Length: 117
Image (cartoon, rainbow, N blue to C red; front, side, top):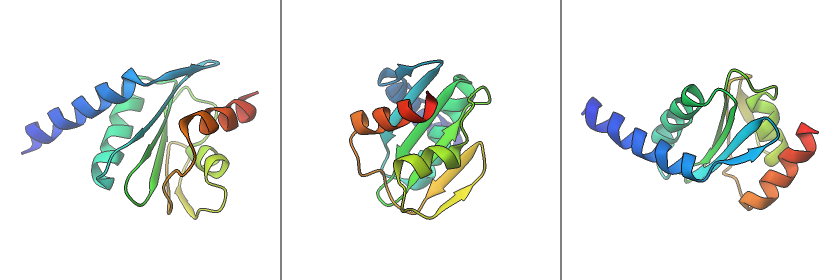
């Protein structure tokens, strides 16, 4: 099961990278994965592959953010910017909001651009 799970996670990460958008020194990856556990694994794998990535993945009920080790923003800061009224737990590398991302990818990129200036 682990190998199958790993292959499925890798496929999701590949699909997410197709949608990656450069923003300054970063690759911003915004996506949706129905399963919360899978969303966490995909975010972790993506930031290991791309150390300057900022990954935001919404599940059905929550949003996960993971930032690569070369990112200057913390994961909490990213989620606070994108979902201001959410309860957020986590640290600089990975954080979870109690709400899913409810704005468009374009709006999210605009908000992140302002924070990164």
